[in-house]
Image (cartoon, rainbow over all chains, first blue to last red; front, side):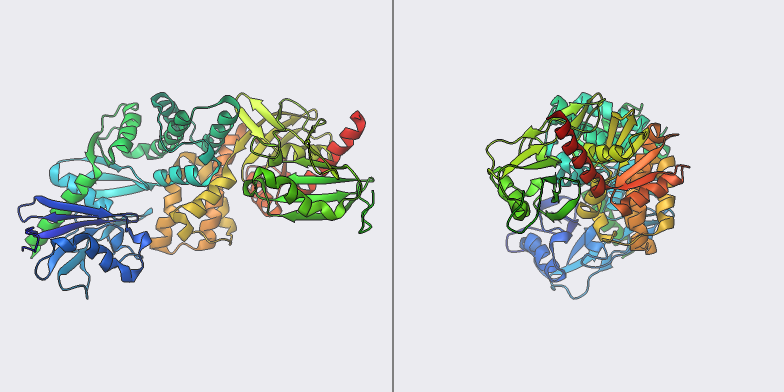
Length: 305
Length: 305
């Protein structure tokens, strides 16, 4: 279809999380024609604002009736626009039956992909399954473990194209809460990094994970008594949290092929920590994998329709 | 001295922390004549407001010139009213040479007790040393470990009336940050308790401390998928954090006499967790020990003057 601005848009891909909404105008041949994003994540919107927030982002791409908008992420949570539910693992990460939202503006046909659930131990993901599907659409023979570092870092065991099981570590959110809502905000600056401090902290936390709460206060005490450098403190905090996570997830990654899907700087930190354990993880960009996953889901819709 | 309201006040004891200020009007025979407190902790005051915040609390107790006001806590920090410094361990917890604040209102003579410092590993305490001094003033032969649960839980090795070494776990502040500034605020209510959930979590965290970041997200996932009860979730979070702390501090408390100085409910949780390890800690109230410690310091001043 063609709109006033001359943009030919076959469908629209949307990644709508807690803090951001990102959309891509897609051509029928799979090319991305345009992209847009804003900070209207689910956590900032009341239910009656969901549609207008979306239209504000994509309205310029719309032409005739019923352009397909295929969305993943927290938009499909209980507290999102529609509860798109979960599919139980083991299963392929690509959802083929997104939930259609009824009663929308006639120019759009919004469908939301479900998340994944694991019953025992209880766990959920929403959004990461689409990144995993994107990765597997490009690397279909991958067998191993995919780590998706972030606010809630996911670790997924992949075999024969399926997510067999997964775990979640609250590492990113712990880092944010500690640097934003504790006495460490006086010690940890917003940026800065120290490679050696990071590596030492990873190693320390892997061998003595129980010391975490003591190590946290040490950052403060060393800043007070020994002038601990802010960049070193920040890298050490990150290393402590990633180290304790690697100690916990060792049964997942030990001896496995590992792929990292995340923001480049964070993935690089995980790659270094895993590298010290003798692994050589491959890395893929989170945003690229999201778009690849939404595209794979779009192609899946064509197959079933 | 005697003021207009007829109160005979020999000196005033003050515990001035980050979040609260508490004062006691003391008679020369050691009795407490009156007490008062407000929420003007150090974190809420600008330097020019310190004196008026104090006077607002104690003005009714003042008579003639130079009533002694003996204070402990964050009032003596770098960011407090005056930097009262630290004394290095090993040393007796009772500070005999509080720092006098110059230029105050003529009705008061404010003196601030120093904290304790440990150089290797770096650690500091400010306020807890006075509680320990209060405890030792009543139990002078105590030999063992004193645990002071709170925002920053302190563990102090006591021998021959001295603090030999100490550690700090950020357990209370971790609990607050997790329940206030992460996704767990949707899962953990402000109150509620489940004895079994607490005990199981302590045991779990002591045997698998590295799993902390995974266990944290499990609280959220079990609430979503299995309707985990809020009281159980709250007790389990507390148990996980206290459990990992006990795993870290085991070399301190194993085979030792342990005393707990803290708020009653929190001390009871620590007592139960330590009880499961075969210990029978004695408990003392934090506020009482603070006043006892300030009184001991007051008596120390008389000795040296």
